[in-house]
Amino acid sequence: MNSFQAFFPVRYNGYQNGYQMTTATRQEVLGLYRRIFRLARKWQAASGQMEDTIKEKQYILNEARTLFQKNKNLTDTDLIKQCIDECTARIEIGLHYQIPYPRPIHLPPMGLTPLRGRGLRSQEKLRKFSKPVYLKSHDEVS
Amino acid sequence: LCAAAQAAHAGHGPATQHYPFPNRGPEKAWGSAVGLTACAVSSWSYIAVPPGIKDPVLYILKLYDKIGPERLSVNSHFMKDLGLDSLDQVEIIMAMEHEFGLEIPDVDAEKLMCPQETVDYIADKKDVYE
Image (cartoon, rainbow over all chains, first blue to last red; front, side, top):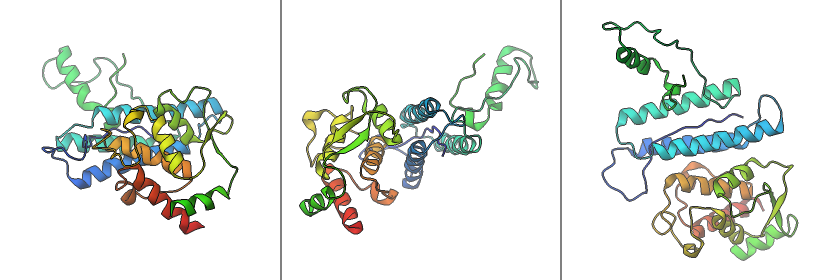
């Protein structure tokens, strides 16, 4: 049905030392990658148009490949877990709405109240933390 | 085993199997090509994939742009010889799944590390159904 891009840290090849990922995490990550490909195979666009279906399938596969490749050398377990959460969230949201693109949020400029200081930097810090997990690998478009 | 499987396999469909392929040459990025073949869009034009098991496997690997065709042989290890990583291996196995209409479980898929093992595994699986 729907598939989403995901990005995960995976071993670069099976023979490197020094990574801190456990085997279980690696299995999880590769399983998610496989799941995305399987979903992409059966994806149907919400509009029902063949061109849209093709475009969305391409989008899903490209995004998955790019982000997985980008994050494949991560070693920090927290970041890895965050990436896994982002992937699962994107998959579930995409399946639910049948839209493969990331779900944007509305955050007006200077709209958050910082605890101290009212400059741009505290605002940006707050905005970084207020981004939901499924938008972590997408930059804000202003 | 392979010959028997090939003989049984050839009896099932047309002499050459055709898979949907967009109107670009097979020399374009395999990623996008197999992505679309994996989608099985039926309104696109078709390329001819050779019948049997070993030939399609090698043919698909030749189409993959991350593998140099001169290094590809039946016993070349994906990671050690061809320099691919586990993500690429997943993609390759998914393409094989789609090619042969099989469903390869994760446990088995991660063990297939060279084309010969893939051919043997598929031949095994096909025997079960035939």
